[in-house]
Image (cartoon, rainbow, N blue to C red; front, top):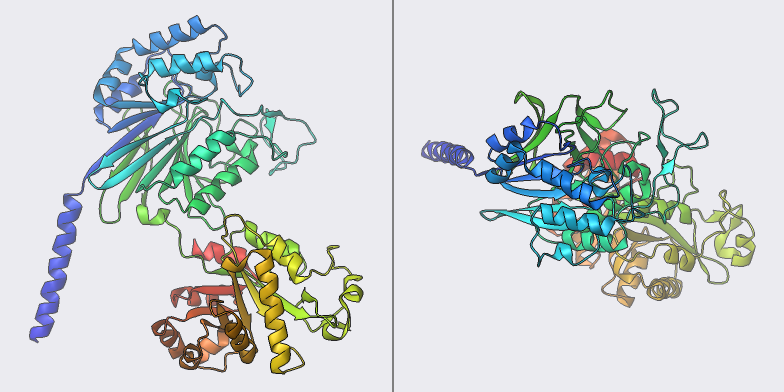
Length: 584
């Protein structure tokens, strides 16, 4: 009875502590907007000042310059800066800014605009950028700022989507588009040449450095919308390879807490972009401060809006233990027209459990164990890509699941004979060396899970030959750091570990307990899902013994959920795309 009372008192104390912390949590407010014509009233700036935001970020088209005359451009900034609403906002908070096309100089202009340097200086002078600022030392206006809130840090990344950008491509009827019909005429079509750039290589390298810096929340500010689908107007979707590159960069740098702030389109919306191996990327578009548009374009990623009236954006962060982030779009009447709340924990990478079985072959119809399926698994950012290795009659290691290939027993057939019969996609039957070469990664994110298939010749000498040959091929390919080994042949794994103690080896057959596997120095158990269903206690045993836990081959949604709930390190599946969706 006394023990129960103590427990109840403890729970009440914890609850009270959480309520107190919530009530006293610090609040940060960041307001933002875009598309403000210098000759029109701007009551939204006065409204923004009333929120006393910690920062206000102008997201481009801050004026409508649209000129090659720099005196005209400067005069338009001066007219904007003289507005009492602008002065009131500037007095209330620190202003940050990027540009888009109209304040850059010309509608939809990019790197070929001839006055970009002059325009840059006028922009920086107007926003009182210090003379010693790094922003003045490199081409373009990209920059980073930080907002420190106690021990929490907000990183504000200000991108330049004009100075380095290739021209957009005019729409024509030959364009391949995601939708069959649009209810309005399109201006542009997507780039298909991956050499075309939006940010430019220098800015890409800088951005990677910034994403590697520590921060609790990251606001990536872009004049063009990032998270929408292609709509025939200007957006990152016009440069799909650049959009994908940024998703991949966030993923590869493990940059958590990313939100996008964008403008340009003369209406407001909140979009959510999903990308393999990523947490959801939210894009909050606020536009315009004075400008409006007749319609909103189709956007499958839209989760809030569209707001067709003038608006500003507001992010309110309550710094709880798990910070709460409210995203709002507010109109001139101070009505919150869109509101969406997320927690910081939703902007984190889940542990990636996805092992593509024989590569990511199924969705795109690639042959199993083909180089195409391996490359697709790497593109998806699978945690690993599993493949099967056998030895030919002339001791060449090849990648194939079955003992027979095109009716020929692999162990009894020379490689040249096997190679004469291509895979269904035209690939030559891959040797282990060619397969490992295809799996080389500068910044490895996908492990190579090499299954050594049991030989018909079950002798120590044969196992040793295979182990030596496999380890040599891996070493020569330079992929040792991200190659792991699995096999149904327990003795084969033991021989491999004798040859290379640091090699990561996992047993497949399911007939040995976690205790036995750990005792023999094997690193993990990689059993068929049914083994764990029959022996659920093995899961806890394996965790206690710090063995790696993997289950194969799990394609059923209910089973995927069960193994995720059990906290498995990895799940091998023919449906990596489905498993990524479940992880999200």
